[in-house]
Length: 377
Image (cartoon, rainbow, N blue to C red; front, top):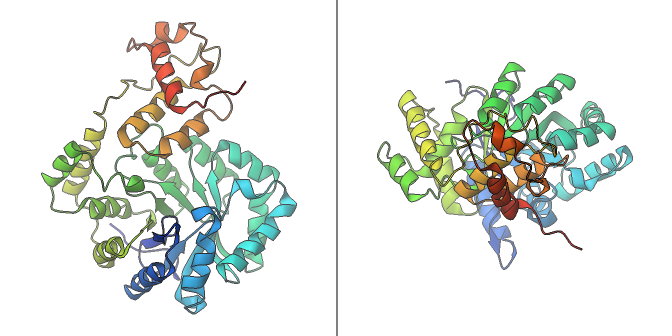
């Protein structure tokens, strides 16, 4: 496996995600963050990742006070992002960008990403010429590398990379549980990046902590095959792909920092046996009260409400397996243009088409009870 990073200013393949910083008394614990940043840089790493919305707007000032104010600019690499909710027109993008520079205490960003791109957001970003604005900022020297972070299907990623070949790097969700997941499509998105020769930054390598806090059966499956800790196993899995140039971890305390820099400082890629172990542990997750949908999509062709039934079933399966926020995000992606589970009119066409003979109407009610918000009035 190749371990090279294609950006010479970046040291190593391990990055500090500033979305889950240490907290004390409901605020970011600056002394603890400083200690962690010092340890991270001392270990030979230098990549920090933030966004305006992290910690309700407090992540960027924390980066300024704990990193930018304490180290020379060339000592660290900083990534920030343009997020949908903070602009509604082309004219608003530059002032927001300048605000981000000020909040972070820097004069340029090493990487600037179009944040959380999906089909819906991509249309807005195009309408507001966000990509063009970012590319202009790059020409002005205020951005060194331009990219996207992404949450949608491989087909949408293919569209974006085809329309904007200027994209230099893509941040995707990738871990051994999501690699073959039909909702997240981690492996398929990775393949699209490789097709377009785009280096990959990995977010959620431990799936928001789920792959550290393994269910008992999964923990037993891992322990039976390796002595590696769940965290080291998950992060090394993501880092072992040739096209992955960076793996982010949102560390919250020094214990996590110490463990992670320990095994990433002298990074050893996965062996074939470890890949087999990852597949075995991932298989355990698939046995958690899941809907036995094969994703054939026969059910969707005749649906009068245009409900993407297999995708919604994948979202419910993910919720049952991981019990985190991520499945709710993808439910929003899959219903962005309508077709929520609660829109089902109970016609039964889907059930007549289903080769698995699933009680789809009853299952959609379970999906709706999990994800659809009560309607007022």
